[in-house]
Amino acid sequence: MVMEQEHLARLRSSFRNRLVGRTLHVLDIPDRFQFMDPRLVKTIEERVESFLSEQKAG
Image 1 (cartoon, rainbow, N blue to C red):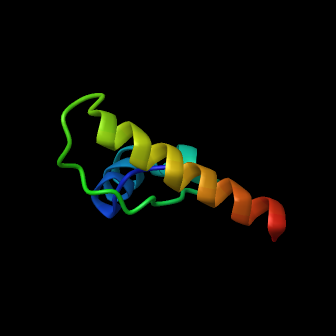
Image 2 (cartoon, rainbow, N blue to C red):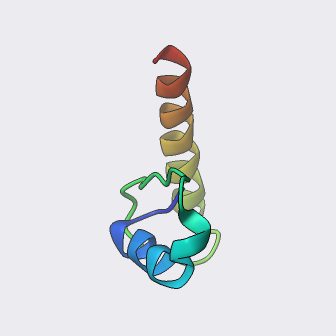
């Protein structure tokens, strides 16, 4: 999982061969927070929880 599309693009650019056959998910969280900002942590927790819930249901 990555926070935003730019992160996904960087990973694909740097590790294209290692990502073959792997699924990457974008959480759509802008990279504008300071490291370990409580709002960032909460947002990541919510997005990951939501994503995992969808995966279990689907």
